[in-house]
Image (cartoon, rainbow, N blue to C red; front, side, top):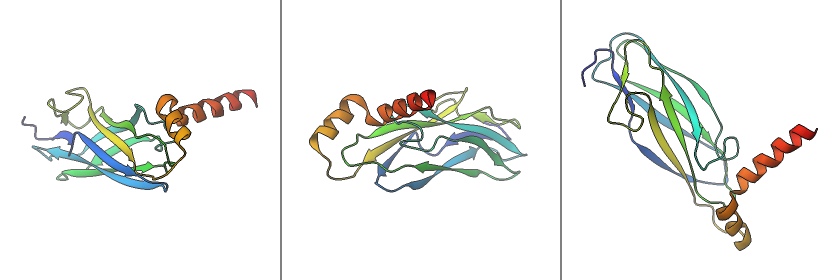
Length: 156
C-alpha cells in the first residue's frame, strides 16, 4: 500500500507482558510506513477484554502525533500489579480516526477502520491460596471488586 502520508499500524499484532505485583509501564510503538509527509495524528484508547480497567491496567485514551518526516511514535501504558493466584488477562489498545491523509494497514487486526493490539497480562506472581486461584478462574475477582466499588459509590 502506497500513501505519501503513511500507513499507520503497530509493530506487532499482540504482546505478552509478564505481570508482577508491582506497577509497570510498557511502551507501545506506533509505526508510520510507506510515507512520512506532513503532520499526521491518530486517536488511541484501551478496550476491555478479560482485563478490568483500573484494576489490571490504567484506562487511557489520547492522541498520537507524527511531525513531518517522523515514522514512529510511542504510547505508554501503565500495567497495575497482580496478586498471587490471579489469572492472566487481556485487553486491547485501539487506534482510530487518523488525520492528515494517513490510513490504516488493511491487513492488520481491525482492517481499514482501526488497528488493534492485543495485550496479554501473563500472571507470573508465585503462590496464592488454591481457593483464590480457583475463584478467580471462575469469576474474575477484579470484575467482582469493580462491581462492589460501583455499588458502594451508588449507595454513598
